[in-house]
Length: 65
Image 1 (cartoon, rainbow, N blue to C red):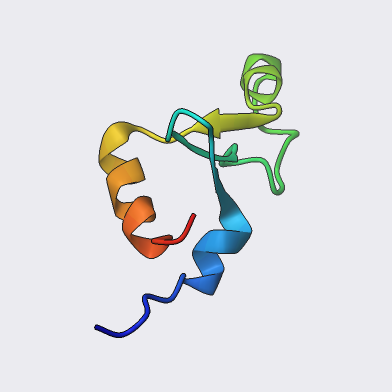
Image 2 (cartoon, one colour):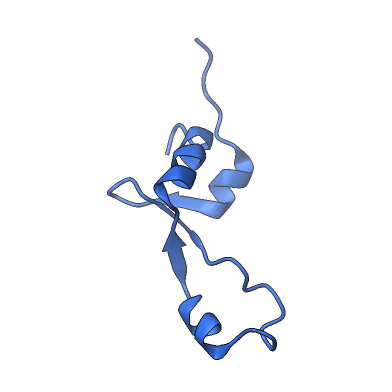
């Protein structure tokens, strides 16, 4: 059985928490903040956790995490 490699794009974008959830940066914050509402910008600070359905896919990309 060959070794499983981690997808390098996934290791740059995601981290696993101690409980096994997938942590990622908030989407939609790269540019265009003028047209966003203040509420959106405020709520999109920091990081967020992925939904279980998306987390399952990301965990396949990171077998050694």
